[in-house]
Image 1 (cartoon, one colour):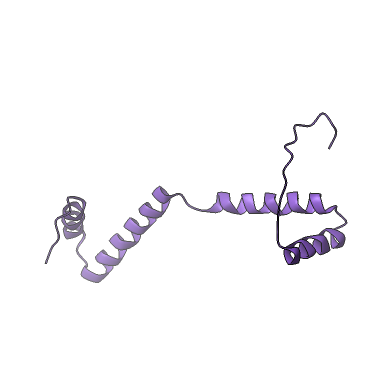
Image 2 (cartoon, rainbow, N blue to C red; image 1 turned 90 degrees about the vertical axis):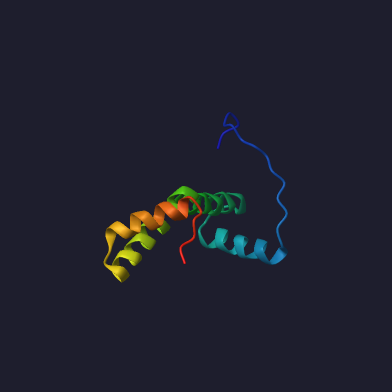
Length: 93
C-alpha cells in the first residue's frame, strides 16, 4: 500500500496466545502480521456475507413448515387457513 491509499489506523488489543497464532500464520504464509490480520478479517467479512438475513430465515422456516404440514396431513387447502389464523394470532386447538 502506498501513502496515497485511504487507510484507517487502528489500535487492536488481542490475547497474547491469539497474536502468536496470527504471527505464526503470517510467517507460514510469507506475510507481515498486519497483512495476515487483514487477510483474516477479509475472510471473516466474506463469510458474514454468506449468512441469511432475518427475512431470508423467516421465509425458509415458513416454507419448511408448510412442506412439513402438507407432507404430514396431505392437505394443502387447510394449510392456507391455518397460516392465516396464525398470522392473526388465532390459535387452533
